[in-house]
Amino acid sequence: MKNEYGANLDKNGYAPSIIPFVEGCCWCGRDGDLVRHEIFGGTGRREKSKRLGLWVHLCPACHEAVHRGKSSFLPLLRLGEMSARNAYGWSKEEFIREFGKSYLED
Image (cartoon, rainbow, N blue to C red; front, top):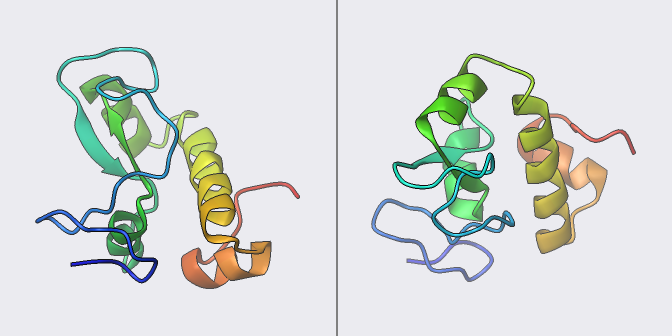
């Protein structure tokens, strides 16, 4: 199966990530036991994140911090928005139409 931009989806509905990261490494630099985290969550947004490649690998500590709303969350949302807008050629308004709001200060 493919997403609307032609990327192949894996058996769980994930497109390859469009977020720049080192394979097998959390964004904090840890490697090993990592989990996939969809950058944009909530009704409809989690599935869209999977389908559009807006996910990263996180270590358990970073994953917990993101879900607790720690300060690491906003930079991840900004990185996700920048990556989506660049990869799909979206304007700020198009991103807002897809995900409800902008996280960038442009």
